[in-house]
Length: 253
Image 1 (cartoon, one colour):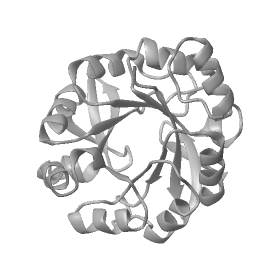
Image 2 (cartoon, one colour; image 1 turned 90 degrees about the horizontal axis):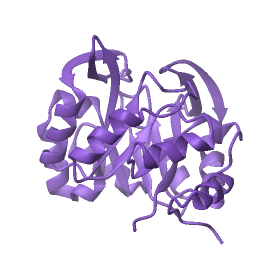
Image 3 (tube, helix red, strand yellow; image 1 turned 30 degrees about the horizontal axis):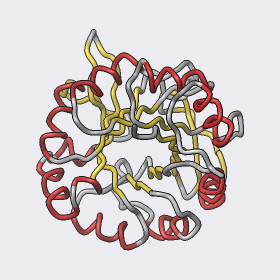
């Protein structure tokens, strides 16, 4: 049985790690290089780095910061924010990223998913979907959650998979930062519909929420930020807890 992955997420703004609630009200959460080193040491399975204002500010991801983070870690490293071309991806992979995450650029030009999968392989391409429940529908949002699209989340998830995405990072904006639990129902629906791994994101507040995400939500991985950044839960204690609940995880020695 494949082990379930625990993934801390570094949301980056102005070179610092930040965290908000429902994508707003950001507060400082520390130095990304130091946090990355800590998570690698603690036994996190992967690390996600999202330059959350790159798209809105119409600039590229912070390649130099990616290079500094990559130098500190020995676990798979996914980078997103402001990526819109093969050249952008090449620069990030050369800086030490293992995978890239695209969101707004994929919605704007879906063919980008096909191009990146063809050039770098599906295993390198994560499509992030920021979703919010609007008028009875799960709707895809872009530009750091600022702009609603006309895309329905389930249909878009299916399309990105068909275009070559190797993984979906599914963030429920309604749950983000609330610490009330992941969007398990939606995660489960997408996970059972598609053959690729689904990373649940948004809403982790306690260790039981991770259990629910893996059992009820059928997620392949669970991503969290503030509970790790502010040391409310550590990665090792979370993994011990999950293991005792018979959820397969990679335990550090």
